[in-house]
Length: 365
Image 1 (cartoon, rainbow, N blue to C red):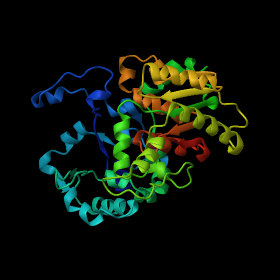
Image 2: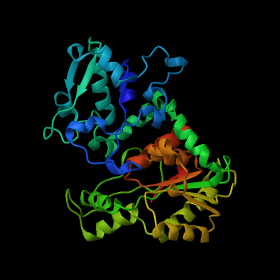
Image 3: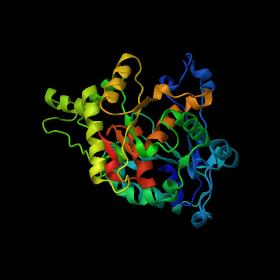
């Protein structure tokens, strides 16, 4: 969305390397003191995605727009002495509860009208703002974001967003597990996060949270309305159980959902043309006995091939972008079932809809 804002403001977006949480790396990250922080592993954005956001070209219709640049290049051509700093605390308080389109247009006007060549948006310090991003969690976690869908989904930023060569190579390397590159029409992909996720689900229940971002789009099936009786910061045991049912489904519920989603696609899809779904891919951080039992249950319910994130063969470079590999397989699948509270799921939903996938092919627990 920041790249889309830069495009709409006729400015070059400045992108950074990606830094994962320590537990997300495929290897152990040793303890590092603050003085050694700059040795922290960094993933180039171009390893995760391709397209204008990561410095790729615009299309012919927008070729006059400046291309995105790296942070290192920005530091060279825009030294601190030549930058105008705009602190989020000077802009956001007046628009904190506004719709997404009002927030976007406020920033757009500010950037379009600024005469300075170099502008840096500076985050307000905590506790002045707990989420000081230009487009913050309070926006992404509410229906206010939906007013941006039409313009964002049709923008070159979205339409030209592509899979990185590294991720493409990882997907191609593992397609034999599914039966080849033509097996996506027979595939259902399910985002099944486990492990530490129960705590996250309980927090979502505690705050009576809605679905996240594009998962809230009204034309998608499987809507979730927070049950009455809860309040900000607390909820009833009955309501918490409802959240866990949708956020952390049981093995039996997962099998049933997969079966019903497959049946619904046959009844309502205009794209699948009667192709039988019998390939399952599980995007998951789970491992061990639970995952083995889950695969067994799915095979007993008619899924000929069941593959999980743990089954992929990835080299060291591909392993670092394993989450993006999962996302791209889910983007290609005939059906995707995701977690409505997950930004990971929301990013897959965005790619699928921009690709032209039917709403009936996008489901939630």
